[in-house]
Image 1 (cartoon, rainbow, N blue to C red):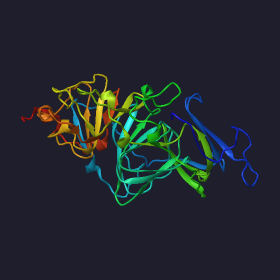
Image 2: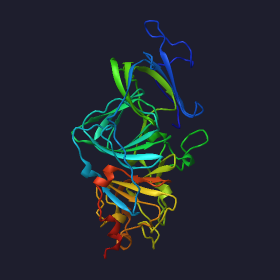
Image 3: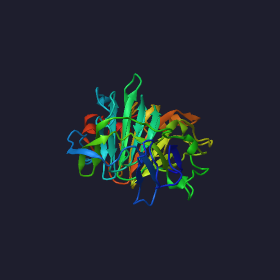
Amino acid sequence: MPYYRQVGEIPPKRHTQFRQPDGSLYKEELMGQEGFSSDSSLLYHRYPPTAILAADAFEGAPGTTKVANHPLKPRHFQTHKLDTTGADPILGRQPLLANDDVRVSYAVADAASPLYRNAIGDECLYVEDGTARVESVFGTVEVGAGDYVIIPMSVIYRVVPTGDRPLRTLAVESTGHIGPPKRYLSVRGQFLEHAPYCERDLRSPGEPLLVDEEEVEVLVQQRGGWTRFVYANHPFDVVGWDGCLYPWVFSIHDFEPITGRIHQPPPVHQTFEGPNFVLCSFVPRKVDYHELAIPVPYNHHNVDSDEMMFYTGGNYEARRGSGIEQGSISLHPSGFTHGPQPGAAERAIGVDFFDELAVMVDTFRPLQLCDAAQACEDPGYAWTWSRKV
């Protein structure tokens, strides 16, 4: 994270005696990235975070069977056809697209998830609809539609749906770390003036979350598979922490769009970056105001990337007539030039404002198709540019 936080009780000096009311020492846990040469946080536990009673292979994790996008073509996936009941936001994830750097899944959940730790990389959860409470060793944050939730690698957390509607989430699981683009930050990590969001827009846990339980299960995802640990005490026993590594939330509705006289390129929408991929936010905004402007995108081919777009609100003008709807995902792969649907350019001339909401994931290695994507694919999408207006 780009800035320091302090929550709960901590001693004046790091790695010094800090005693509980009964006189025993609190147990320190230093969580750090890149061999403790990058961001870290120091947590103070009531019980040893190392005390486990059992470790067993766990076979109930979401499976990922991947096939190449072959024959190569643009694709459209209708995620709302994947609706389920009784699922939770972790084990209920249905993998859609994946490569060696990132996996994108969709979940419709109405039950609380188990305690979970992703030991492979950071996660970004985007809330399409519903509300939830995200609980972790760092505390609690409440989230709702439009929120991005960044969960750093190896943080123990769970997601508890709240409210009357199912919780719909798009999960982006990386093999490394996810954060703001470096060009948005100063050398000391402060958001710069040209960044489309800043520290004031971020939310994170504000107080400790203490749970008194014994023999508590935690599921851990690691490169070798999933493990079910039984901890002697509940991991939510942290009385205080400080540092720059913790879960945080940013709402897509707080993204400030960058506009211009003529159409702006996709990098102006960038929100986060991860290893060999970026995430972008397309939000309601004023559009191009040159007297001869064409507000929708020109035909384009990002030769280094596959482009995945998740349509999560409003009307995406460039895709009108293609079958794209709420919850749709389009995949435009490298090797295919894509652009607005027939008639979209002419219709957009003179328009002042676009009411659209979408999350884009651009990957620098090809995305492969998982079972859930194939199950909800619209087979006619690739031919929609050939239709007569």
